[in-house]
Length: 72
Image 1 (cartoon, one colour):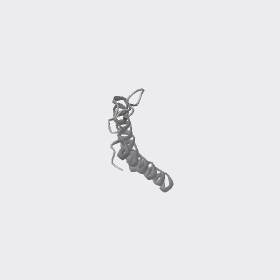
Image 2 (cartoon, helix red, strand yellow):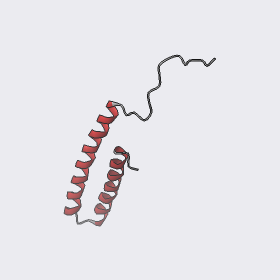
Image 3 (cartoon, helix red, strand yellow):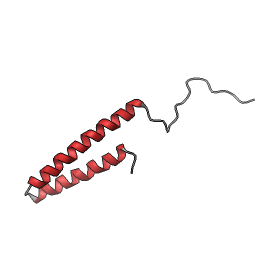
């Protein structure tokens, strides 16, 4: 006879919690706004070192956005 597990039933790992969904939405908005600011800063920047650093930040932001949307 099979034993039944006692205790709380584990949540479906594919089901996203409401808190996580809200967090992803907020982070997506923040990251999109940050990307817009970086784009403006790149346009105004004449320093190659600063421009390179802005480009790296943009890369990180784009990667984080893909993570928020599950597209890695």
